[in-house]
Image (cartoon, rainbow, N blue to C red; front, top):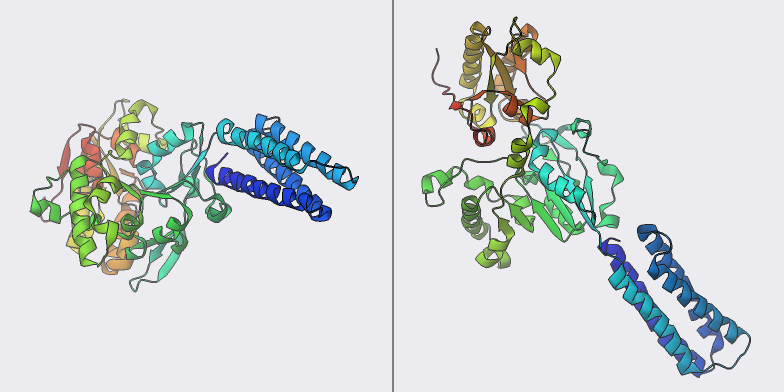
Length: 456
């Protein structure tokens, strides 16, 4: 039984206990009709309670059997009153109370509380930031875990919403998904809600549906938990210059509203706390937002689930599309060296058209060396949405370059939701500095960051 259901059951028991006192009073006053009416209400309460328990714990549960005894007693007393039989008021009150206490104790001790955890990914490619936590919840026999992909929108340059995206069909087959419009948060009131998008209305490129902004989700749960969809380069908390480059991640609406924030390391926890305190003061927040002791509990440096996923993924278990194999395998059946070419948003926003020129230059070099090297180009999943919203002037040139690469077919273009496949399959990383770099380093394979200013 879920906690909210158990609370409802316990409240019903409390109301029945109060009714007992009223029944005693009415019988003592010889006000039989209202006493009989309350006995009927108590019997209906016992039936309602038993039905609720049967729906969660199954038929013939010990608590249900005790409630049946209670309902039988209320019926017998009711019939005695209807037949004008003389009744010992104190005895009736004591018997009702004893029967209900036994049922209430069984409700408390014999029915475990089931937790309900809800996971709200928005982009399927970012599911790895939640997956290992979901698996642990799904394997817990006393937890009901729901994966509810939520819709998101691209944004126009003026901040208005453009087309909606809903990626529920892109999750692994082992992950049962629930439609966002088929889950009633008000009714379920889950114990925990996990999110990996903290930006809400602050995001300039995309936006989850406003119903799923963290301030609204907070209304329906006692514990809102944020886990970043990215991992960052580890930074010394005392290195002010390095901290300056990551501090903007530390203060977002989802972080402000979250009860817990799980970050990748203890050093990153220190940075989040320090930068959160500074930003909270600047934004005029009060109370717990300025309490370092509270923030020490709010921010937890437990590691990223993305690491769990990448460590658990083996190359021999990967499902490789045939068109990828056509690029990877040589004529003699041996395998080429595979380079993961990752292009990211930060480099685009910094270098603009130069960035597109750099990609064109890189593709040309790898095309010339395709006999021995297979290029696996994987752009950030929001790259074109970012261009449409923030860099529309480079979009046409980029899409033409991308489309030409795909049509030629000498390399792999990966726009799927599974970044881990690209990381595990490839032999080395080349490209922009992004969250994928830190993830890739966990594999121990070589990493090289491209310099947009250099051409060959």
